[in-house]
Amino acid sequence: MGKSVFIINGHQKWDMSPGRLNRTLVERADEVLLAKGYEVRLTHIEDDWDVEAEIDNMVWADFVIFQFPVYWFGVPWGLKKYIDEVYMLGRGEIFLDDGRTRKDPSRKYGTGGLLQGRSYMVSTTWNAPEVAMSDPEQLFEGKGVDGVFLGFHKAQEFVGMTKLPSFTCFDVLKNPDIEGDFERWDAHLEANF
Image (cartoon, rainbow, N blue to C red):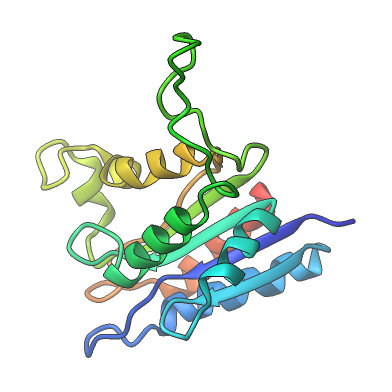
């Protein structure tokens, strides 16, 4: 059996953000991964979705790609709602507990995830330029995209998944390089899958 990838498009439509870029990145990932022999399932947060089916998708997948625009330095609220509902109702399938036990104090917090052996990737789109992330004198103090999403990464670690290198499209409204982003995305997928 081939490897399986579950792609979650966390975009939510706003007047200034209709979702074409995130949708196209999801479509390109689907095409690249299918061509490489992966089985692919897709969920679009804006569409209707069923919690039990989504739990099944998470358990089924060898890899999960979270594709989303960054709104106010975080995930869109619909994606956060999705994670809250799917992970919490997936207790027993996605995670068991926080990992600790009274009988074994060597077990550490955050080790109760049931998705071990699976990996995830974060792919984001930002209006911010890359320099806003990397320059210690700018808004994000040089912490980078992964620093902004530390809590998101820790949630995935909590359920047992390991991180693949993140991907980012920067400055998508004021100074876009969409064709360059697509080339980088294809190369990123080739290098990591």
